[in-house]
Length: 304
Image (tube, rainbow, N blue to C red; front, top):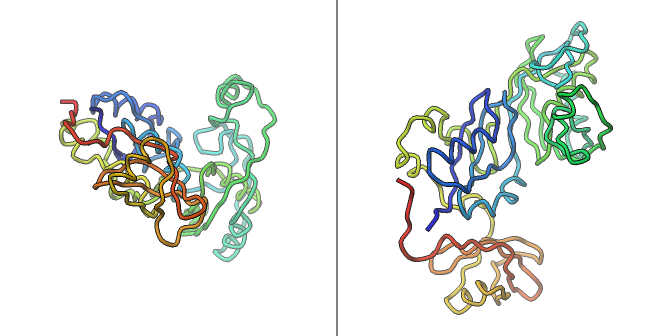
């Protein structure tokens, strides 16, 4: 039986998120692997890898908040939003103090609109934007709503500015850097970007890239977390055998965690097994939304 689980990886610079998926497949000997949240090739940090049946939980983990530490270079604007791109404008960095930077940052906190950069994986007419950008083409992009919870200016040492940002899914830190640089009157581009957390998974608990490359598969498998760790913090519904049988056959059950309102998503268990995701509906019932079929009693075979 294929394993279902979660490997929290610290992606290195210079590789794509798809490169990371390919390496996990080879090292763990498992074909069904997905990642929860693309990281730019030059960015490093937390990249959760979902294995086997756990890939069904990808959308739920991708939806969770993320934290980044971004080092910006002030006084430069590039076509990619980072320092690896072509410089399209330079400007002197004005005299800045922390109060002015923090005031500018506040205007980007909350629900804001961002225009996706041309060098991004967003689709346009069946193609990725970065494919068009590499051909020298620029197309109109619709602004998208994103949520930025906090922006903390950790260090201001012109021409560098280091920010810690907590945000929701779909936020482009390169766009934030460019927009903030414009607000400061000098432009800015990301020089270094580290994702320090995805949901409940901090960077200091991630598997180093070198370990993924060199550790024996058995050692790597020992660091694979349970699939339900992707939903840590969710309320849990626990079913008896009769309710579990109904739930696994697609029927709502007369059980819901205390103090959960209709529409809430919950983890569902029976006899210690994680069954999948349920949704609380009227009357204190829980209906199945996403079932996992890997966590069943019996022999579990891991690739050698």
